[in-house]
Image 1 (tube, rainbow, N blue to C red):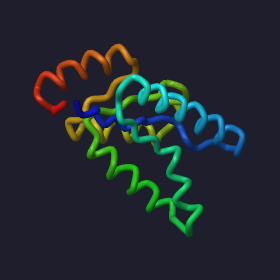
Image 2 (cartoon, helix red, strand yellow):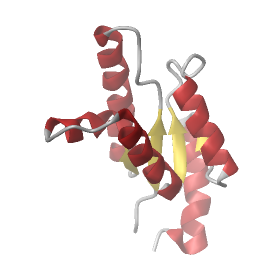
Image 3 (spheres, rainbow, N blue to C red):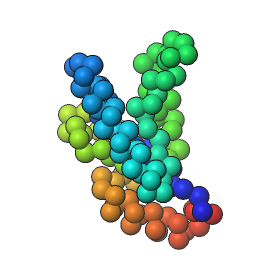
Length: 123
């Protein structure tokens, strides 16, 4: 069976490095849990590793993440910070406008996944 590819959308930026790290840790925990539940999560919080090799502009990071979002089967929204994260809100809008469903609970994602698999997407 093929895993559903799930883009994990959530707060990343913050006013200080401590809060950025907290957002990263929280988002990665969610992505890890989705992996353990049988999904193939894309975690934008790992994008920074590309910058360890050489310079990457903020625009390149954004374009990279959006390219993956548009290839995703679904989006999982990390609730923490979603109200104040303009980036996360933009990702949710783009997903929905592109016909990609967005979920904020594992129960909703699991219910969608069963239907997705039944449509032979899980070959």
